Image 1 (spheres, rainbow, N blue to C red):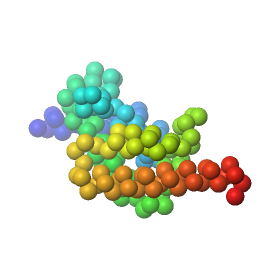
Image 2: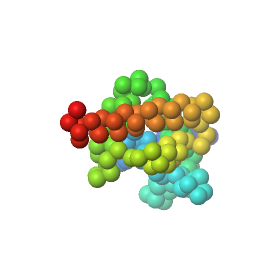
Image 3: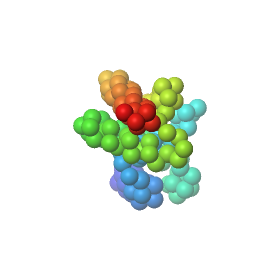
Length: 145
């Protein structure tokens, strides 16, 4: 048990040091960890971490990390979530604010499969509203109003 806990902590330390800490904002970190999940298998993985620690420990650690980042975003006030999301969208080269279809795809990939249903619904509702606000803000900025 002690070895498992030590390995879990080391995986999270390496993930934070090499992948998460360089990123700004909670949505950037959530997007990164969500992207480490293979949608066809539901398994999390990162090549360097798996080579060092093995597939199963990495899957378990990344799965839990995804849940924690997801919950951390939901704990933020909506105004802070909006700022954080705007910052994330601004870092996506040439992507701009996603349309409604792309928003739905993002939502589903960012939600950890093990999250409780009520948190999934809250997250979907918040992000749909926040993306809509970002789209409205961009269209008003272009029209000069």
